[in-house]
Length: 215
Image 1 (tube, rainbow, N blue to C red):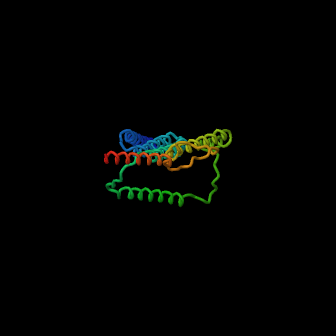
Image 2 (cartoon, rainbow, N blue to C red):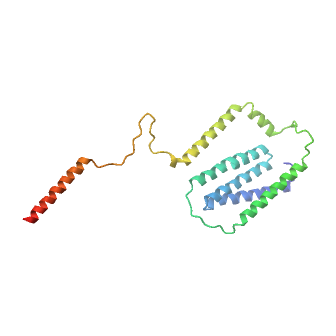
Image 3 (cartoon, rainbow, N blue to C red):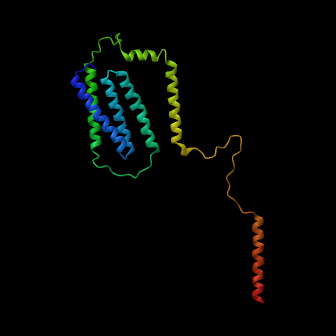
């Protein structure tokens, strides 16, 4: 980035303060969900550091992979495994929708300005030059295509395994093979012989008591 040295120093100071504050929040906060959100702030601050070092591809990969994939996976794992808590009303609940509306309107204004200010009439072809993103993309889809696809399959397998582990309460305790016949679930019944034997005993006992009473 071709910016003035003073702007670089101020930007570095803001990013460093944001990174340190978010990192302390990750460690010190008791709510693990808030810690995961602050971890995303740490990753975004690191991406800003990469932009100051003219590493545009590394900054983009930092946001896409660490914030968009790893941090979201951590949030899903926390929300699936975390213990249940009783419902409690939030204080100042209007603050969150207000901040969300402000950020959404700001992003909409930024995207609208970019769309209106972009000269779409010109050719969008890639100009030759020392662009790191273009060269890395060419290597990814030519020389390193097979390792790139294998890494994506490995990540897919890890995601499926995480989903299965998160839903372990639905797994049966004993897996019954299809060849074996499933046992029929019946209520235990008392045999008739025992009933007759017990009935004879009770009748004989009652007769003995009557005889003793008569004597």
